[in-house]
Amino acid sequence: MACDWSQSLRGRSLALLVSVVCAAVLMVTLPATAQDLPPTLSYFKHRSWTREDGVPGAVHAIAQTPDGFLWIGTGRGLYRFDGVTFDKAGFAPGSRLENAGVSKLIVGRDGTLWAGLFDGAGVAVLRGGQLHDTGMPDPPMMITDLAEGRDGSIWAVWGGLDNRLTRYADGRWQKMDAVSRLPAGQIIGIVVDAGG
Figure 1 (tube, rainbow, N blue to C red):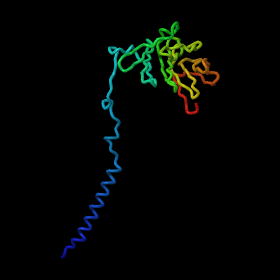
Figure 2: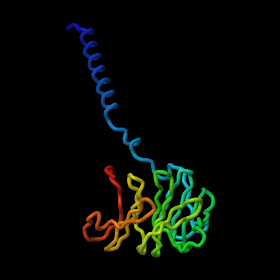
Figure 3: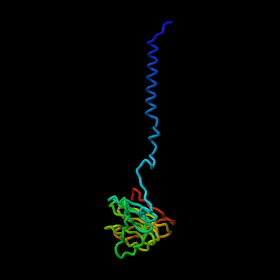
Figure 4: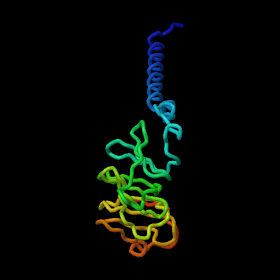
């Protein structure tokens, strides 16, 4: 019996080629699960601040303005955080809102900071480093959410059962429950959809 080495070698080469191709396909198509997992918080550089570091009480809202400052809304008012210190933002002189706490913050597309307030104080806007009262008539005990409409108007809601939705445009507030034909019930939050 003679052995035909060329046929045997050709068969082995073909088998090796098929094995290499299959292995390559598997390596390309199988997920790399270790890299697909999102990194944990320990992966990122982070730091936390506590009351001992100057955090002014319980934080209810946080927003960042285009200048990079973080604004912290607390039951004691609005604070600007520069990465090191917390500085209280004052209200315009003579304001009735001097001791109002902040329940909600948003930054408008133009960079303006808006603050929903506790204690029946309504909504304030930050201008020139001070909070200014927007003059919301019959403000609720607490603003639960704020949103900016596509037209730049500011919408405010609270969790009550009447006059739950108000809109600020052209320097005045308008109650929107009846205008919008809202059904009965509480409104806790508001989101502006793509249609405005």
